[in-house]
Image (cartoon, rainbow, N blue to C red; front, side, top):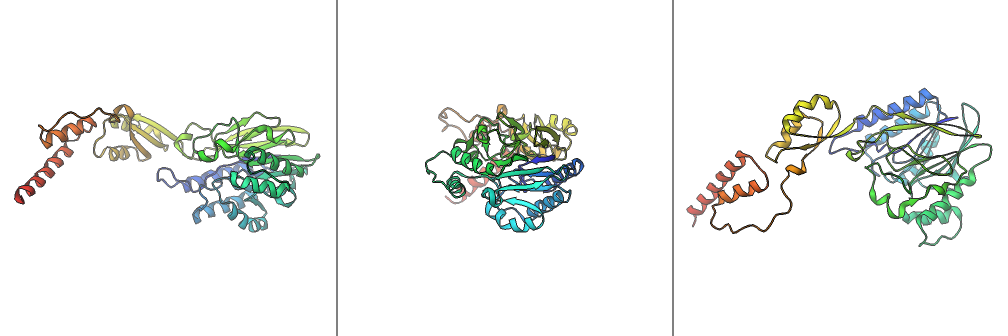
Length: 389
């Protein structure tokens, strides 16, 4: 059988104020085309469908249409909540999604109550079991472990042990004659962050070792870390990564979806399929003149620009004029004003104009218009003082 593994869509995410909904729609359309072309038996979406727990109506509309379109390819569609999603809302929509033939989980469920999704692969007729573990905060890991495993759990117990207990429970839904897959949204020990994750929910108490899955699953489909990577374990454990770079920290990532081929008696074979419709993110450096000269080579890339000139009034506008896709404009550190300065010398013998000129020089502000405006303002203030002693 074949299935497609993807995660971390982050629909609704903006970048430095730039709306990316149309771009995200194009990426999801590309994923739908791949699912149809490859005639996959299932599409596994391992969490973080949305950027925020309160997505806009347009973001929700895009996700709903994408899930329906994936289902219309003939594939089973299984999606779950990540740490950016609102788990309770996913659970509220679960019955409606089920009526449309889509499996949506917001919170961990018992293996015999929706926690394991079982079906027959349309291509081979082989039985398939997909255990689903949505994202858990440390606060809810204890409660979920107690509810599903029906064993007392120490509140002081480690997060990874609680997750291990949940994994072991869900694997009870596996059968020997089937392809058994585990899908989870969490951080694996030794995993490399992609650059746009929420650090507070990827570090410290949130690590789980890859060994927690044992050797039973034919494949483990992970979401949460945005970088595509395979983890060392007794079974195939893979992060698909995000299909779109969500921030400049991810500009070097390779955006893909994973095509997985497997049978009950053969190991999983994984093929990376590139996603090409999203804008590339790029960091560039140079003077305004150099940036203008290279503008054509940047194409439609979204840019973070480090200007190699001292700060001056209107500099950002100049950059944006020649590079409309410049979403972030900064002064290159070597041209920035020093952040630490020694105590100022005695200056009582200098005029306000001299002091202001020195102030600008210390901060590498070279702009005649600023000097002129200061002189004009000084004249107005001093004239008012002279007229009203």
